Length: 341
Ligand code: PEP
Ligand code: MN
Image (cartoon, rainbow, N blue to C red):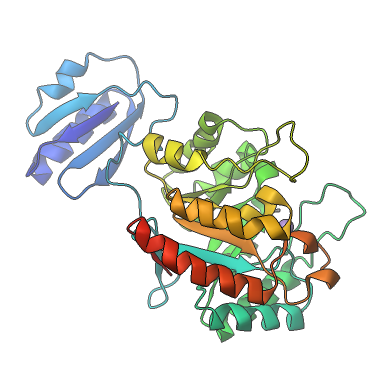
């Protein structure tokens, strides 16, 4: 259930409600909105909600019927803005700005990443993507550079004042990733790796949670809930296409997931049109559609020489295509009351 405090409820009243909820066996998650403090109470036994409603300072108690609670819009009507990066270099995701994250599918070498990071920075991009540990369908495909790849990413990002997002594969890698990355990416194949999600719940670093190729929106939000119940509320969702009977494109990018998530949840949502389509010529149209539909950002693969890329060259944009897309998005974003960052 969600307890909405009255506007102007004082700290003593809030603490009193929190204590009562804890006595009743709930875990309490507090969220301070523009007007109201909201307390999300999860777990606990069935209680008569009037017992809470009658406490001083309480405006209303909302029973949440959805299976996810902390990820639901009722818990945080204002929408979450996730702050990414160290002090002095922070950016916000979920606010007015549409945030671009771009870079190669895979870290291949220091030269490759440095070249692409330079291009990204010239385009005004603030977050560099790149996989150092790659979840490949075939065990014979390139598996990534590993920790060396993370170092290469970090160095190139620091040189160009960029932040880093990279995919983590399992919970044993968390301490290593915390040394190098600003956003921990959970890949589509790991969306229901519950051991990983439970450990990510304990860290205080934003998590980019991709939608599983066969996951419903409810299952996706429940995976977000795993991370949030441990106290890590900095979850950014990423729609990357789902598996359907259509096989012209690599996946079917579910653009409608954007307004659906906006209604059901307060979490920011990005779109990855690269994995969503698997074809370079389809990336820009879907990127434009995603921004028009209300996405909070895009995750896009860009490579300076995609024909030589070790992974996903066919869906990587050439730098000039990326620049052109940026100029188009600069026109689209204001039409939906947003601005590009
Ligand atoms: C990626 O972004 O590098 C990636 C592997 O994507 P996904 O998990 O969506 O397949
Ligand atoms: Mn890729």
